Length: 524
Image 1: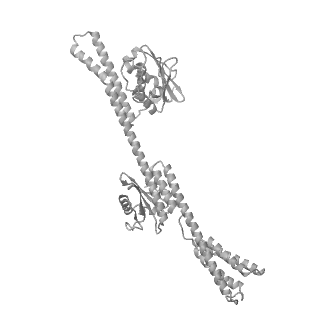
Image 2 (image 1 turned 30 degrees about the vertical axis):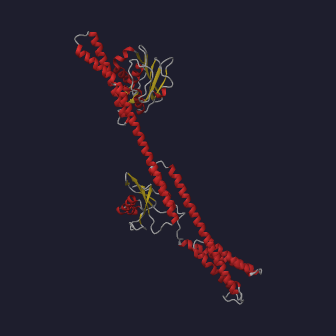
Image 3 (image 1 turned 45 degrees about the vertical axis):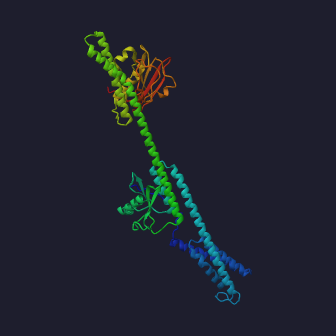
């Protein structure tokens, strides 16, 4: 269960005024009436018409009705003002009697005018508050749409939805996200005290949420279904599919019709965003499956072509030796043995590359790193190439310092073998292949160069792609599966290095790769 604590917005939720506010408004109202009375005495002192004093009192009623938090101030102030006018400004003064025959009419008209003014002011104030609430709720809906479009995960969508409902209603939220046709663990948003949290995620509450999930209908408090639970449960659904259930702790409150429509719209936007997120994940999974299927198809196609030639050669040569072994010369036998040996080595190297590519692609390859001398690793790789190196001049440069790298020696041997074997395949006999290593910026840099035909610029970006083979003719006339250099790239990246290909001046190509260096501590 996750419990994010969020600041809530009370702007749209009417609350009863506190006792402190009531007392403050009382003194403010008394001060306004007192000021109106003082102005009345000023008017009387300068013999200004009594009608102006009545107007001042009506203005005071208007101000009180607009500014005070409770409506009864606007209803009580006209009565107070009429009695004050009668007591202070009509003869006989300081009594509630009036000698003039027209005074009762004046009092009644003043009271009616003050009451109408007060009622109109209260109505205008109420309409203003409702307009502000409507604008606030509409803005929440617009913000919800914008924020949901920016969310890039299911948790982000749920968080946006819950926070927007908090702003709208100032009520705590319990969100159940649906996953694989069932509800996940609830996430609480708001300020529910920790001691009371268990009550909002009890078995009874979950049963109500699951009922909403299965039936795509609301239930809970203020409804006929599960009325004794603590939350009102609403489905976040679209196209008759429920993507989540929202529990709103409404307490003794309730939503008005407009607020219900906003809540429904927010939940609809949430369901749409969750549906889009699910569709995106399904598309990504479909793309991965399609990529894997394409990889398998390419692998099978390459294997079916590339294994046939060496296997046919091995079986044919073995058949000749079995059937005619006594009739052929020793020289012919040695040539057949050599062909079988070379073909078997080619198959072994192919299988090694296939296994390594498979382990790297599915993430099961684990690097066994140790501090290794690069020169020794290179020498080991050259020795594994065997007879292939006899037709080329392979020159290994010796550095003046010990170059040690933190590597998996087996994989780096395979890396060097693949690059050198690639150079042997694509260069004519007696070509030179040079290998030289040096240290630079905390990395061991190894360059393997040849003086063959080189690699065209249009091909360089593709040579490390799986199943890509250059159009240059291979020296032994076999097709290449295009796995060797792709595997080299995967091995180097797994070690935290880089690999690239460049032109060798004046002719040929240079493969350059880097590996993390290991510090050498010499103890004398």
